[in-house]
Image 1 (cartoon, rainbow, N blue to C red):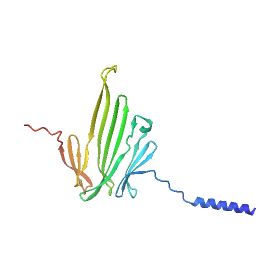
Image 2: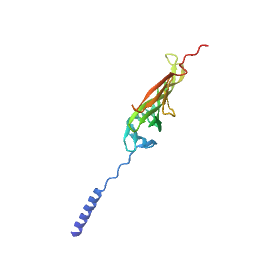
Image 3: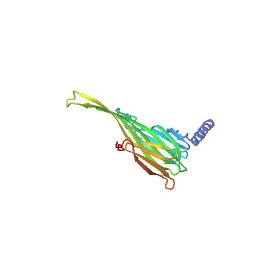
Image 4: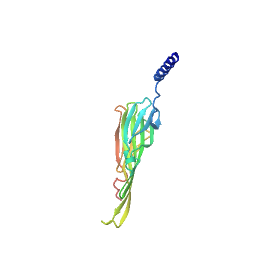
Length: 216
């Protein structure tokens, strides 16, 4: 009897001791896809969506965005919709203030009847990490479209059309910390105002393709 009581007591003590141990922390499933200084961009997979974050080492979030990717699994005609790739964080100085560009690319493949479209989008944002403020946001898009055009109502004859469509502006940071946005019709130069903590347009000019030809 004494042995039985002793075994029960030891068993209870072991159970109590085990319960006092801290449970191991769950490992974060976030994947770091870019880093610079104390900043990082992470991508966390979830059910039918990803969470894309831009954070400091103190875990202060500059942005957190949910990316719906349900089309990848439920619609076989679409692939890689919205998932950030080629992410890069680049520090630069503007008027003595340290700023950062965070850029990433998304590719989308859409295939429907008689039409296939491959779209690539390059996102670029400028952030002041100290004030947690987004200063500039830019999207540049290039779409390659292949389409079957039917020449008669009965669809007996057809021809294939291929075209490349570009939208948005090319984003460039100058050595002085200014920003140049170059589009089809115009080029815009923006300069940082440290007192207002924002970029302001200082010059807009027509691009060469839209300038009127000089008379001979």
